[in-house]
Length: 151
Image (cartoon, rainbow, N blue to C red; front, side, top):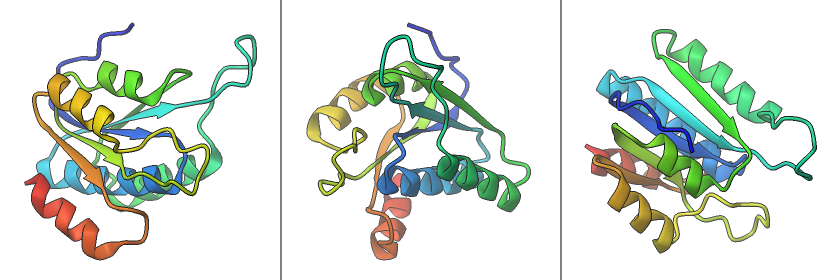
């Protein structure tokens, strides 16, 4: 297991689901408001242990490109790893002021990054800062509420 640096930051977990992409947008806003770097932890799936290295899907890359254009001074780092997202987040969350995770999407069979009690409880015990559950993609009212609660 790699030990993440203890630099204050905003960390967000991504699994490629719509709700995890909404979490990235909320995390980017938090990072800009707090003047902190954004660390993205992408839990990639590989079909087989000997398959090619994991990569970030195009839609995640496009979102990161758009965020970088909107906030050119925002420092963004990312880690792509073939491990369960909750393990990856615990590994990356050292020193984070805020960790953002997506809300559950029970309609998407591949949605690993969900805000179930076990995930948020485990992160709350691991992270010194706040754990924020991003609202479902497209829910602006809840997104505004999540931003206020994070502060």
